[in-house]
Image (cartoon, rainbow, N blue to C red):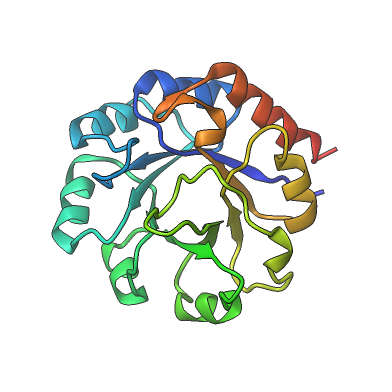
Length: 208
């Protein structure tokens, strides 16, 4: 069976990045959205990214940031992938000469096939739970059966995942990767070593 990758998002310190990487995470995510409880400064992000080992992706999450705001982060922080959670169009997302994924908050009426067609340059599509006024990190799952099995972009599945449900999510959706934040936390922005390990072990159990 194809290996499902794991991204631990909402990393706010080099210590928490180390916990995720040691446990086997393929990527860590840092939030550059000031209204998020997991938001970090450019200086902290630079410290985290400079301590990253080889072959682990560093992802920057943005929500309706300006061109200048994203460029300021990129000038100081080494990011391998950009993640856009707002209303950004393809022209904006693709303008930074970096691979990117586009996040979608899934509602019953969401046409995921049409959305994928609007971002043909994306490296993947991240599917998250919809909660009014909250662009991500809700801690809530959505109905995975709403996801078509033939989407043209690799799926990164997010939204309320934790060690107790991620194996079922992988079995139903067969995503390229899973993305976890609140499901491995003690409190918003503070990761829990045991929860991260249990989450990644659950994902690894689906590979057997």
